[in-house]
Length: 390
Image (cartoon, rainbow, N blue to C red; front, side, top):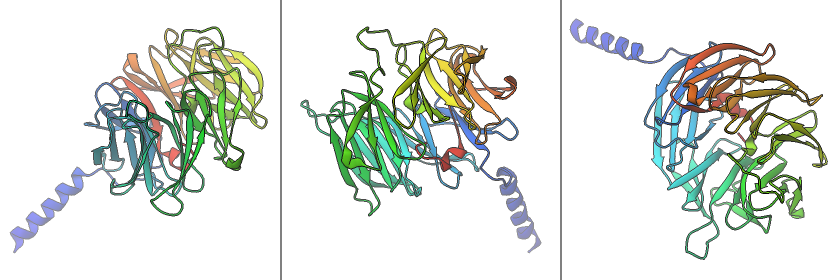
């Protein structure tokens, strides 16, 4: 009787020792290691790496969203992979290949649904967030060659909606899941040539799609969808002079602060400034290169800007009030992504070609810590779970 009891106790102790210690998840995040198909789970409180999770497929254009309890991350891979990662047990919870070429995803307002946008097959697939069982398939508009339009710019929106753009057919669609898993689809056509990416404002009101085929942006007011899509920021694009574009800006790298929207200009060494109430351009800010991400400190006073090649070894810090460059930093080769912690006391950035992630104090503009990483790209903190459009 004693021997089985001792074996049972030993087994329990072994199991307990093999599990990570009990903790919360609000200060956790992840770093995508794009070249190796892996990710790092990171702890912002201690500026530390906790674990590496491998076997996530093609992460060359990966993005992530988080469950509302901030325990699970959902990764969208370029190979069509949808992977649910448990940040606390530090392992893959579930994984499936849902398409041939995925370009991002979103989690619904109530946290119940995960939507994935696909180039192949063109359309959006929607899954149960717990089981990853497919609950809806929204095929995009068919093309003349029998394929379907590629889908980009997928975001979550208030009212249990997903909004996305169709690159090949010049459309914006809204899929309303408020009445169940069979969505009500509203289509907006002729919105401008080739919408390539999009964002939704922090209050969930405006959906903004950048256009690759012509200048300007398409704006949908989700408070008044009956008014249709209108054109804003006519100068947004390459204009009549076809400038070389080394990397298209990421629209989710926009920043809105002090009633101003700060937009990375396509192919230009500029950040464009708009009045965030009238959506009219008010200024331009000269910067060091072609901006990719314009990231606002959570208090809205600073913008951190990174650049396309050949200026991707530097980051400039702008003052949102004066529009002046207040710092010109050289973190290292291949700065790809930047992410503030929820309250803004830290700025994490990935230095791909330097094989590291850096942690900065954005108030003192000092480097706090450097962590090794394999070709790091996207950085995502679990605090995104409480924000619209992330």
